[in-house]
Length: 87
Image 1 (cartoon, helix red, strand yellow):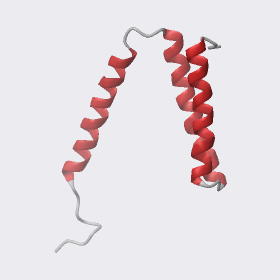
Image 2 (cartoon, helix red, strand yellow):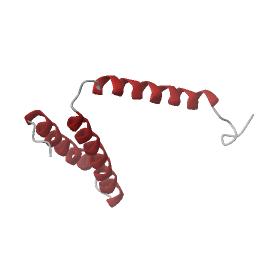
Image 3 (spheres, rainbow, N blue to C red):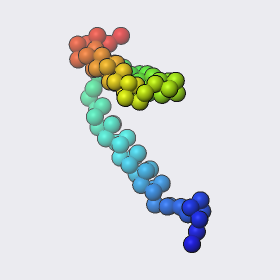
Image 4 (cartoon, helix red, strand yellow):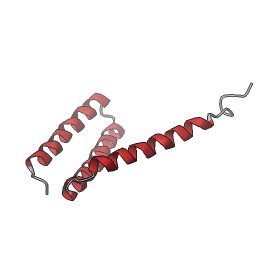
């Protein structure tokens, strides 16, 4: 019997690649016909929220508190898109 470190599941990496490709196609369909400003703003928001979450976690903030802070900021981004207050 192989040890844990020598065993691999070759199929699992292939599944991950297929899911990533499918997700990318789904996002392209969702953004089709959207205003370029909104798409750019959403992309910036995703990057900002991911960085903010990572900084909070690395700083040692409780995971639930970090998620709540990110959710609040996400609500602000959504509000700005809905009201047209995109910079």
